[in-house]
Length: 342
Image: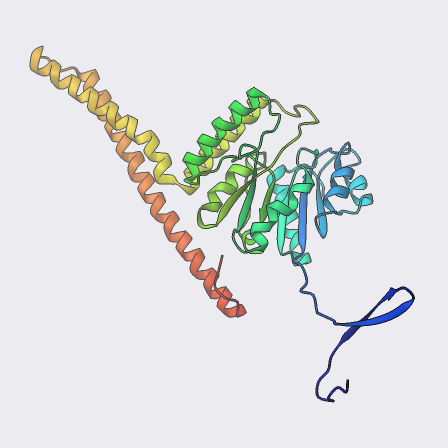
């Protein structure tokens, strides 16, 4: 077959032999679309027991594995590096929030198509990485959370389940975003969502802090199974109280109207009840209960002040969010990028 000089056909020769007879089959050489690069970020503190195996397994499903050594005193960083991870070393322990900030900063240099975070204690199975990143790569989600309570059953102690569900309720109510597993540390993010992630929380309340950021993002959940191989590394009661304290702080900063209303409403109701009680005494007993009236006035005044404070802070927060979005849109226009998540 004579080929026109203006037509360029790139052909691959594949030869199959049948009974000694050589048959030459020509197939077009089709260019493959490069697969999106998946980057795994693993914050780790004194995880020398598991970190190497976690890295090796994660490398089967991710192009790059970044381990953030959060000031470990053991061989976590060295073992992770030998296993093939890109290691970010922090001079001192700054907590999971600081470690994730460092990990997200480091992952940008690898131009990821999706970023997945998981723990370094072998609690999360790296084999679940493909199911977590699939909705992100398909463009169906900005964030995907691996849920321990969604169509999957893990061997979770009863006391831990009770604590997790209590924190779920607190986080869902405070953030205004409803999830089945608000404390899961196994999550996948789009590159645009990564740009929005910046954490103040120093401890393990960073998952709750994320949920306040999710309000303007497309979030999905997929089922995962977890394995608790290292026992309890921290006091569960202390941990739970720290998370609740962080949730209250986050609600005050990010949802001030809700936060202050929770305190102002009971005070107003108490003030009205005391006022009604005082009026009853005046009507029937013909004396003025000064103590009750002072209590009623104080409760009403405090409740109104808190409510006005919540409205003021909520207005300022809305203004700052709108200003941030407009600045982000202007920056995207300057860079010539399409408007999207900012």
